Length: 482
Image 1 (cartoon, rainbow, N blue to C red):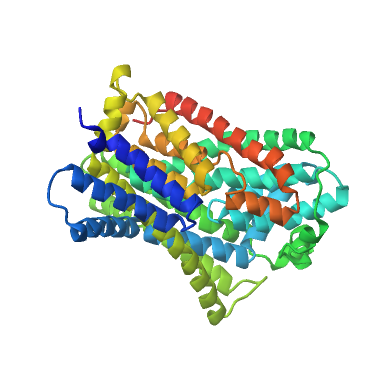
Image 2: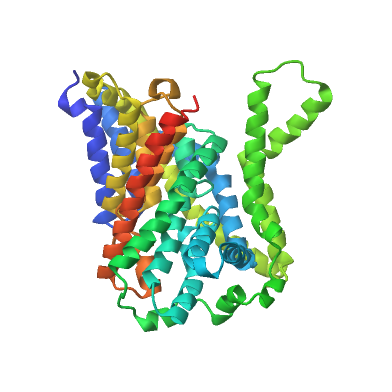
C-alpha cells in the first residue's frame, strides 16, 4: 500500500480541487485551471517517485501532451465551428426550422421547435441554436399568449441533448478522443441516445410548463434579444422561404459527414472479415476510407457550407465577408481547442500518476470496476464537476481524462467504450444553474426571471440527464457492440 502522500487518489482529489477552485474562486478560466491541475499532478508525481525533480522537463511533458491532443482534435473542432457559423448566416438554419415546422404541423409547434433544435445543435453550438430559434418561440407565444415555458424548454432541452451527446460538438469529440473511441462509434451511440431522449425532452417541457404556466417575463429583454423581425418573418412566411437554400443543401453539411463516416466504418468492418478483394473494388474502398476519415468528412462539409454562404440567395456574402465569418469561427474554435488540449494534458498526467491502477484497487473488494459501476462513476463525476464549475465541456473533458486513466476496455466492461462517453455526455447536462452559460442564455435572452429558471430549466436539465443515464444503461445492456 502506497503512503498517503504518494497515493494517486489523493493526487486526483487535490488536482480536482485545484481545477474547480481556479474556475469558481480565482476566475482564471477553464484553460488555465486545467493546466494548473496538470502541473499539480505532474510535479506531485515527480516528487512521489523519489527521483530528481526537473521543473523544465515536467513542464515540457505537460506541453507535449497538450500539443498531442490539439493535433488530434483541432481540425475537427475548426470544421465543426465553421459549419455551424455558416449555417447560421446563410439561411440553412432557417430552412431546417421551416422544414421541421411544416413536417410537424402548426398544431405541434413544440415538436417542430424541438426537432429543429435537435438537428441544428449537432453542428451549431447550443447558444447559437437557442438564439436562432428564440424569435420563433417568441412569435408563437405572442400570438397565443400562453405556454411560453413549453416553447423555451422544447428548444433548450432538445439542443442540450445534441450539444452534450452527439459529435461533432466539441465535448463529445474530446471525450471520444480521450477514451479512444472511433468517431463513427461515438456518433452512432450518441444519435441512439439522443433519439431515445427526444420524446422525454418534449414530455419534460410539457410537464414543467404546467408547473409554471405564467412566468414573469421582462418585456424589454424580449424586444432586445438581438434577433430582427426579419428573421422571424423569414421563418413564418412560406413565400420568403423561396430565397432560402433548398432543404437538401441546408442539411448536407450535417448529413454528409454522417454518411461518409458511417459508410467507411461499415466497409472496414466487412473488410476485416473478408479477403481477396479485387483491385477495382479496393480502389473504391480506398476512396471511401479517405472521405470517411472524420477530418476529411467534416472538411468537405465545411467547404460545402462555405460555398452555400458565398452563393446564398437569402444572404449572399462577398469573399471578404466570408473571410470575416471564417475568422470569427476560427477564433471561437481556438478557445475550445485550447481548453480541450489542456484537458488532454491533465488526463495524460493522471494516467502517468498511476491513478488508473489505484481506482481499480479501490473497487477490488467488489470484484473490480464493473460495467454498471463504471457508467455510474462516469455519470456522477461529470454531474458533480458540471454542478461545481458550470462548463459542460470542461466537465466532460475532466471526467473523460479520469476514466481514461483506468485503462478500461470493452471486454472488461462488457460493452463498447462509447457508452462510457455517452454517460459522461448526459452527466454534463445535470444541474445547469447560475454558474452555467447555458442557464444565463436561457434566462437573460428569454426574459424569464432567474428564480423561475431554477424551477424549470435547472430541474429540466437535471431530469434529462438522469433519464439519459438510464437510457445509456439500457442500451449498453441490449446492444453492447463488443
